[in-house]
Image (cartoon, rainbow, N blue to C red; front, side, top):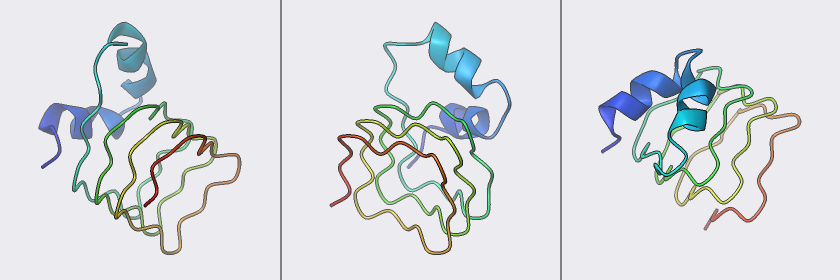
Amino acid sequence: MANSEHLRLVLSPDWNEWRGRNTGVTPDLTNADLSGKDISGKDLRRADMTRVNLSGATMAGTDFSRAILTMSRFEGASGPGAIFEHCDLD
């Protein structure tokens, strides 16, 4: 289950600022339903996004470096310029 505070913040314009102030926190978005949401430009480095539904999401320029995206769904998602370096996409 996603951390409710992290889920609320990732959908707000304050996310990247919060990440900058909380560099030691691993965002927990497990099982979150982000389908159809615009998460463009978000800093999701090292986030736990296991079983996240990103179907139809807009992810332009989002940084998923070293994120855990195991069993996540991406049907119809759009992510030009998204970064998926060293991700766990198993």
